[in-house]
Structures are given as C-alpha cells and as structure tokens.
Length: 220
Image (cartoon, rainbow, N blue to C red; front, side, top):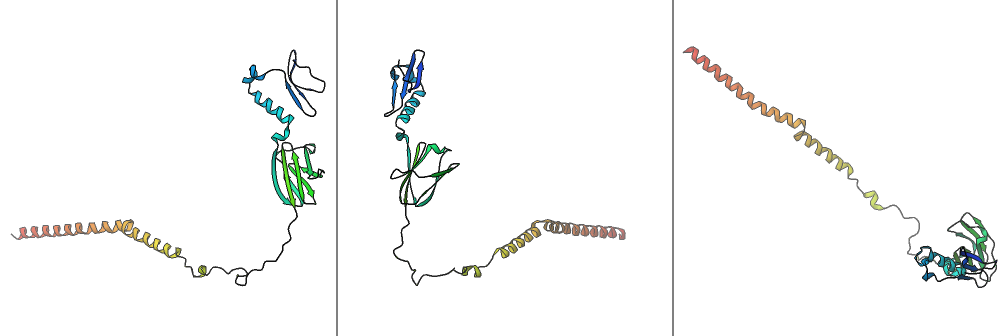
C-alpha cells in the first residue's frame, strides 16, 4: 500500500489504502503500488486508458496535435473543434509575449501587427501561424500587343446554327399520319370495304344467273 500526501491525487484505492497515486509538481509523478501484469488488471479494458491518461497528465506535449498555417499580418480567425473557455486558450508570440484575443462560440479572433510566428494552444491542439507581410512587386507586367483585349463577341457559329427540331417534328408528325392511314382506323375501314366489294359482285352474278334459268324454264 502507498501513503499519500495531502497534495497527492488518489487515482485508485482499496480498503487498506491507495494503490495508485499521482503527485503534481515538477516533474509530475504517477506511482503504482503493484505490478499490473501480475494481477487481474491486465485483463481489464480500462488498463490501457489508465496508462494513456497518466502519460497525458505527465507529458501533455506527447499528445499535442500541431498544425502549421501560413497567413498575412493582421486579423486572424481560427476555427476551434470544440467550445472552450478563455482560460483553456493561450495565444503567444514567438518572443513569449501573450496576445489578446476574443472568443465567439468556436471562432477565435486575434490581431498581430508584426510578422512572425504565433502559437495558439487550445486543449490538445496547437495552431502555429506563420504571418508575413505581403511582398511588393518588383515590376509591372504588361500584356503583349498581340493579346486580345475586351470581352469577346458571341460565337459566330451560334448565328449560323440551324435548329433542326422543327423539321424533325414535322417528319415525326408525317410518319404518324402515314402510320394512321395504313394501319389505323382508316386503313382497317378501307380494307374492309375492299373485301366486301368482291362478295357483292359475286352475289349479283349469282342472282342474274338464277333469273335467267327461271326464264328459260318458263319458255320451254
């Protein structure tokens, strides 16, 4: 068992006393009063989290995420991943002087009037801004005389283009008309009338023959 001081942080304890103690200060210390690999603790899912949190507490720079961002001198707006309090944010120049800043929701605003490096530390994230002054042009570029100037006119091909959709629509309507004449109602009516005409002619010839036969019999 361990004997903890009043300023120590008791991470884990049993009935007999604390077994894992963290001591703040310089350097920070975490003491484990037993061998984790020789106990049932090695099978617990929380064991890796315990060691990771202990390392984060002793050396937070190990887990610090850094981003390098280039920009111009002046007002800088930084987007934060989560809502933090002003006490959790530090904006420092490269000479160690702190810069004033404002915080609105998840947007951080600060102003830097001189070129240099500004570090923004927010929780486990560090934004490193490299701010420079805009360079002055050494010469003025002039386009060559052969370069076209002004807004180009509309395409010449658009004026000479021919819309074919009207002609295609007329051809489509003509095809529908032909199809209706030969295969539609009109075609069926014409075919029916043609099939009736031979039958009527044949019946007329038959009636004439019968009349002539009756007349011959009467004369005889």
